[in-house]
Length: 488
Image (cartoon, rainbow, N blue to C red):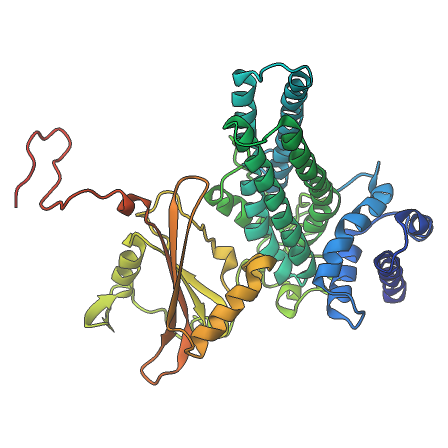
């Protein structure tokens, strides 16, 4: 397709959504949509949203969020029945993502059956079966695992999309994700009231809050499978998917637990391909085998790269390897530092190896945002088995604006600006989590000896165990199997 015809199709999509924005009904634009598109390209949808949000169209982020569900429903007619590119390999992140959606939809059906049974009993004036209530509560707990599904999407998929230049869809989808989280929170509160027999709680109220949630939740499943996944399969390289597969366990899975690792079949290094090329001949060389979407594995296709950022369009780089001005000197011009050599640290000396081990043994989750507001460092604390805020290498180099959900972004950027300009020296926040842990988060502005701003340090720890401390404890705890308490 020529650039001219491509631009025309983008313009048509843009016009359709602008008409919807200004009050046109979905039915009135569906005919135009069908007339201009025999197929639906998620790339075009992504570019259209990007242009709407960043161009001079009078349409902002909030407007696109309102249009998100509408244009997804309009596009359903174009997507329905067509073959959507997909990876069918068991254990592949897309395979897992779709299996989770199936499991979550099955959970929706189970909850609906239980609610129907409770509604029938209530309408007949019968006492509510405690067993049904326990079962419903358990199903809500299982369904709550959709949070893991969303977190992997937001923390693993979105950064790579942004690196390829598609930053609008993540903003929109993350905003809708948070709305769905809020709706499920209301549904859980209604159920808790019914289980606890609090006030005027009723099955009808539980059913109403649940239906509000289900409608938006099902719409998101459609957007993920009909729009997001095809876009990812056309954008991401095989190395991107491998990085996602490696980092996914950090966030956990929803209902299902993958028991098979995805291992792609690649042409071995130095092995001659069908066209005589040597695999791995050069930095970032593309694999000769087909990728999960039926496209060449490796760097994105030329048409995708032309719409991405400069770094993502370079076929010798991958978004998961973050080049930035903050990176260390190029190893071709400067020798790598000796990790065993002592360097001045604080009031003494440490080697890089020792400093890294110390940071990773602290019982805190530490992150550092540099003076350019880029995510530069996190420790991989081995003292914390289940992290409150998991971090992954693919997020390094990401702008802090992209690391937070839209609803908390203004607060985060205000805090960073306050710390940067010393209106605050630090700020602490704390909150209970649904898993019983108590997160205590501290942000500190970091300045050098010349009082130059260097960035923001964040450290997080679970203080729930501290709240339950008893009287003074001194001396050593007994070793396992030791009958005597060690004394002072």
